[in-house]
Length: 543
Image (cartoon, rainbow, N blue to C red; front, side, top):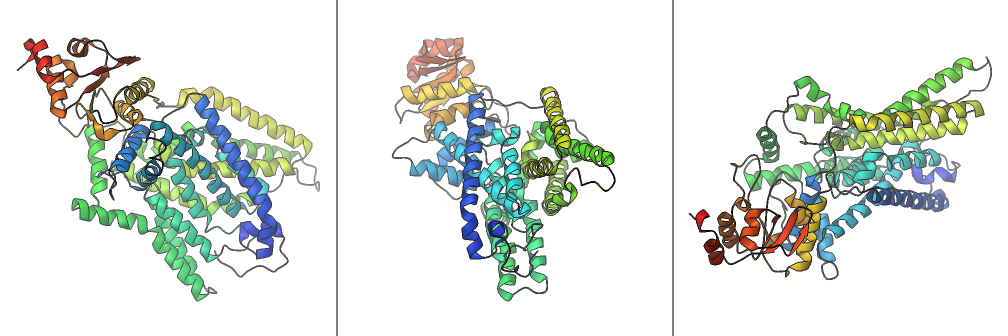
């Protein structure tokens, strides 16, 4: 990984990519900054388009994370959830809520603005990673633009979940160990930056944990190589330790707080077990993640095949002794070997965890985002090199092949997706209405039909004053909804001191509380009547 510094005559344009002389770094800082600005603007435009098309959330987890961050802002604590969810995203979002508390309430809109900003920042991290991997400006820029625009990256760039920032931090860390084709080897200090990025990533999601293990092993191997200075060896050893700090701290915390070091794994496994068998055998589970990648982003896999076919035909048709019709793409792909091996190791670890019921319960493609980002970088990089170095006829063939790939993707994509997004429009709307129409300190009782009540809580913005009427956690005994009959509703509202009710507009609620103060779709907001009067109004249902 680390080699002696290059001769001082290397061109200045490679300085930022390879960490060469200070003068070269200054000379290349301006185009580097322009590229970063272009990447940020492009990612912002993609995110704005995604929002304009109506996307708001991947699943109910998006709203659950906002609610937990709002609760943390109201009452900060070291472990924001007390569950298996890792703490850093809640610290970050909760800190933003606290910082803006004097100007803005801790609303769903603020959380979405934070997600938008993190998506743009993630694109910048991806660009820096691409420069480190390729050592070539235009190829890195092409790859980064594609990595910010493929559908899952586009959607996760505005969702209130930490998958995209986590994957970008992981990619940044892996790229910090890569030696670009033109050299020189990266400085040891870059590996330390990568390790710090991994520490944040491993405290955000579990998917980077295998990446952290691979990073630590590679950093220690680099430190053990001959020719390293003592300072470089110490820095690389420190980077290895820092990469493992997040998992080590979380395991230690679980041992202290829950009495079991791997308590979080037990919680995830018990939840999946409570959901019941999914019907997939061991073999299907082992290949679930690769299959999800191909199913969700087929264009990223079809494009390299199209490039290879065009290159094969062009070289077969080239006259003997003629100039190459295409640049050597295999040689250009070599820098992706090390990051690709780390991504493959991560997916193998996730597949084993899925077999043992220790992996995410839905949208498995989210967990493969590091591999998808890396693949997008490679596809964009190689496509740009191919177009730049190809003859006119080969460029036309490349254009036709890429157009065919897009058409195939557009046609088949709707038939491949297994799970869809859920914006919870009505639940969000009634939560916003409740925030506007009720006093800030007024307690509310929220009907729980499914996990959509989390969208209502997130839009309300004050989970400390809202009370779900029951638990639907599959690990808990089933409980009927108190909104199913007037007397049960009256007792439940009185038990939590609720002065307002939020639920579906149905006869039991209307019989108890009368016409709603506001309706949004199938949902309504009511002022809760007094417990005595409510029970008198429904004596037949009283115990």
